[in-house]
Length: 192
Image 1 (cartoon, rainbow, N blue to C red):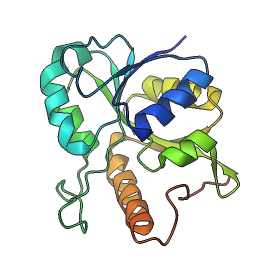
Image 2 (tube, rainbow, N blue to C red; image 1 turned 45 degrees about the vertical axis):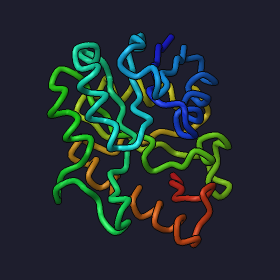
Image 3 (cartoon, rainbow, N blue to C red; image 1 turned 120 degrees about the vertical axis):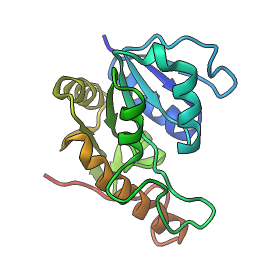
Image 4 (cartoon, helix red, strand yellow; image 1 turned 180 degrees about the vertical axis):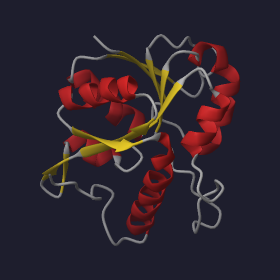
């Protein structure tokens, strides 16, 4: 059984937790108020928080994250201007997290999904697909198996360098939804 700790109890944290629990994973949550004091018991730790909260989590839990699979779901959008990402061109929030946690296996996943598509397991009548990028093949396979056991599809999107493109896709999807061009239960579907 896969043990997962999700830091965050919002829509995304709850939707991801629901999918993973449906697949048989043992899921625990750490709320905003518990951050820094609650232990991280999972072998997989999902950062289901806004990107500005990530640095504080790394500072609070750095030692506990060593050796763990750390899943970054963030989209580092500039929420003041809403017209750019706040990471350097060609980089990603996931790459920054990996640099801060060199002994962890950082994956980028779930950032191209909205909570509604995770909970319903569908996007436009198609099975919701989670794109996973990372440098550790075993970590990606473990997360993919947990996602698939929960009723979603998973695709290996390549190395952690591909997190840059995944964050761009996530950003575009947010812009479309915020501009009411698609709904928050919509998004991009992958058909194989």
